[in-house]
Amino acid sequence: YRGKEVVPGAPEAISGLKRAGKRVVYVTNNSTRTRVAYVEMLEDMGIAASIDDVFTSASLTAGWLAAHVKDDNISPKDVVVYVIGEDGIKNGLKDHGFVLAEDQDFDAGKALFGKVRFVVVGLDRHLTYHKLDIALNCIVHGAAFIATNDDASLPMEGGTIAPGAGAIVQALVTCSKHPPDFGSPFGKPNPMAFHEIARVTRTPLKAMVAIGDRPETDILAAKRAGITSILVLSGITREGDEVPDGMAPDAILISIDELNGLFPHISRH
Image (tube, rainbow, N blue to C red; front, side):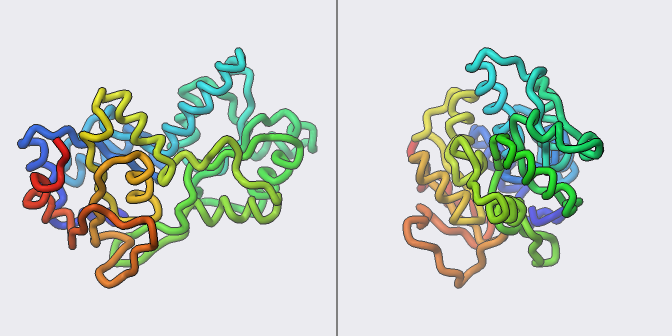
């Protein structure tokens, strides 16, 4: 899809894969929606899905942070997090028990800056200078800087694009002089999502095929995970665009509606 606009042929292509006995899951770097919201959005587009089929940069980030603090014998309910982001990441962190600091909590002074353990940054379509100010000072006072993803832009309906989370992440990198910590961003091209899918679905990586529209995230993540990749030219990447070195997919489709004719020839199983 592009924004709220379903790519022509996508529901039919996905239905065809399912009829052929393929498990279809959805991996997105967009951290604004909850997994439930993504299921509802897909169903509105005529694509049946369940929450177990959806993996977001927000859910991956929240899950990693919960495991990280528990490894340190710390309960998430004792950890304060400041978020630049929307419901997807906020609700994901709350579901794991983290305490979220709100903007107004910092109005009384700077005492709270040093109590924030993590600053988590994703796409925030209501970004303000005040939010950047708070995040910067939390990082300066010792909070770890976590990015859900660093997409520079995202495709919208009508062929337009919008600024992505990467624009916000880079603003903080610039003013803090501090890159994101712990190997984040956890979204693509980090292969974490594909390893998590392999674990949850008990599917070997060699039996997976990744389909996406962005070489520097979707295709690179697939290559890093060692799985087959297909680039579709119905999103960010268009016909005639140059694919960066080291990001060449195993196959290229003009649109996802060509998928069913190609799939039997590129699957490794």
